[in-house]
Structures are given as structure tokens and as C-alpha cells.
Length: 429
Image 1: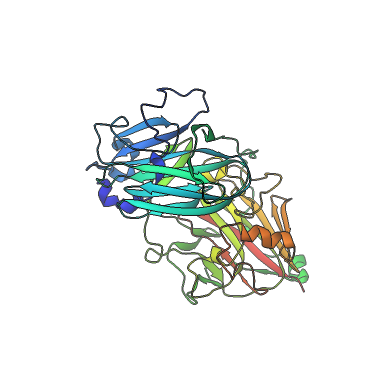
Image 2: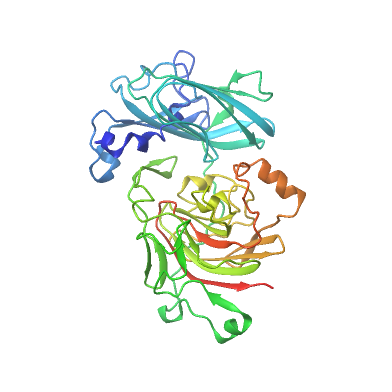
């Protein structure tokens, strides 16, 4: 039963409903092919999801024009207990700090560029506010909503000065742009198993060291748990693999959406980090992601008890299936990006299922991302621009983010299957 898949699976339920404008004021059809945004509604009133198959769930596809919901009667009258998920673009007229005000009932999650703006975990009447620095132009927004038996209600307003609020106008919403940049065509992996996870004589002489021996997880441990590694991380076929965890999936805007999954602390997951610490270095590795998958490579990780995940202290080189995962629609969230901070240029990721060659060079505060032989990101943490960028990002409240000069390398558990191999590092003196 969907309820048994945990309503928290559906806590994602945030403003999907969004975009549900007053039926008396909204046209029956979009004014243009890009007007409004698309949403999926699932009946969760005792419906069974056998094996997580979405085909067994009663569902309805709708087009909405704004994020304001005052009555569900015109949306799906035969279903009184439902979950909704919507996604589209929200166009901001100017760059700067925006304040949002939400009046709602039910469980709600609202995201901008895949970062939570509002999150209400229990069905209840809510009045709350949140602020965010946003760039001018189109930003990806999502609404997920579960009514929890309460009369549906959702009103979202914005303000540029923090005082004068207005309901976000219909003209600010549009369907998502599916452009994700070039993706290399699939090619057969020609690397021999006998050549994997080995150093040549020249590499050894140059100071390179392996961080993965190809047969064991030796040298790695669970974040904040020295000497331990979760059972979901395995060394198989010359690859260091996170096997992923089952989730309920469905397609929205051509993207695979996921809900649920196990407790990472209990099911053998969580990010892993190296036993060793490194100062300046040249790091090379290869990665392969599952369909619609998401993961990451961290390279300035500090293990501190006040943090639960590696990204709380370290910049991340994004690992992603750009063509299927929703983050592929978000500038600065694509494969190779300095996650949420700097977009890669050019886009050089290969097709899903292919091995990608990643490289991170960190020396005297200057960092480079390389993907498949091309430098795609470069930045300097000593520059004034870096401080400003962090201040205006999701990392502003993490005071240990990218601060230590000696750190650990980390690989991310983001819930999806991902594999790594040929992980090697050369310390730069």
C-alpha cells in the first residue's frame, strides 16, 4: 500500500500541487505550449504499488499555471487523498535575495534548483517564510504535496524587499527546457580487466598511488566511522560500487523521479572517505552511473561530529546521468560541475552507462575539474569571488566548508548505483 511505502516517501509531496490556480480564473488549456507547468497526481487512498510499479497506481496528468491551491474539487474530485508532484521553470526578473511566504495544509516540499525552500513533514496548517539568493532568469522549481486528509490549501508569495509580498504571477511559470548539452555517443569499454587498478612503472616513479586495489574496500571507511564501511559498498569486477537502494520511480517531464528508499545508516550505505588525508594533489579516477543516477566526488572532506554527510564540508564534482536525472536540467548541477556553484564549460559527459574519466587538481587553493580529457571548471578559494559565491549558496551555513588544507577524498551515497575504478592520486609538494 502506498501508505506502507511511508508517507514520508510522499513528504516529497510538496508543492507539486503547486501551480494549481483558481479554476474559475484559469483557462482550460495552456495559452501557449510553454505556459504553466506539468504535474502528476497519484491516488494514495489504499492503492497498492506492487513491486514499486507505477502502472498499478491510479494517476492523473495535469497542466497548472501557478502554485496556488484553494480547492481540489476541480483537480481530481473522485480522489480525496492524493499525492502530487509538479515541475517547471520559475522566471526571476532580477538577481538578488528573494523572500517567500507560504500558507498551506498537508505535507509539502518546495524546491528551487533541487534545494529545499520549504519542507513540512507532517500534515498540518502552516504559515512560514524562507529567503534565498537567486540568479536572474529561469530556475527549476518543484512542488510535492500530500493532503493528509486535510482540506487542500497552498498559497505561495514572493517579495524582493522582504516586506511587500505578492502572489507569484502566472507569467513567471513555464514548462522545463529539456536541453542538457551534448552527450557523447555510447562506445564499448575496451579496457582489459588485467589493466584495471594498476600503476605503470612511470606512474610509480612520478609518485602516483592507488586509492583502490581493485579487490577490496581497504583504505576507505564510512563517513565519521573509522574502521567501518557499509555493506552496500562493494569491490566487484575491479570496481568500487555503491549498489543503490530500491525506490518508487515514475517519469515527469521526461525525467525519472524517485521516492523513498531505506535508511542509509541502517542499510549499509552513507558516503565513504579515504583513511588517508591529503594536502595538494592530482586525483584521477573513472566513474559510471546508473540510469537516472546521481553521485559525487568530494575532495576536501573533514570528518567532524556535527556533520552527517561529506558534502557539508567539501566541494563536489558532480556525477550524474544528465539526460535522465532531473538535475540535468539545472545549471551547475550537471556532471562535471562544481556542484551548485560553478557550471562546467564545455559539457563533456558521456552517455549513461559509459565510463567517464574524471580528474581533480588542487594546488595552493586553486582547483581544476577535468572530465574526459577536457578542463571544465577552474576556481581559486583564495579569491574574493569565492567567498561571495559561498555566502550566496546552500553552503553558507556550513562554516567548515572547504576550509581545511589537509583533507580526505570522498565518494557519495546518493541512493543510486554508481561504480568507480582506477582511483589514483599524486600528492603535490
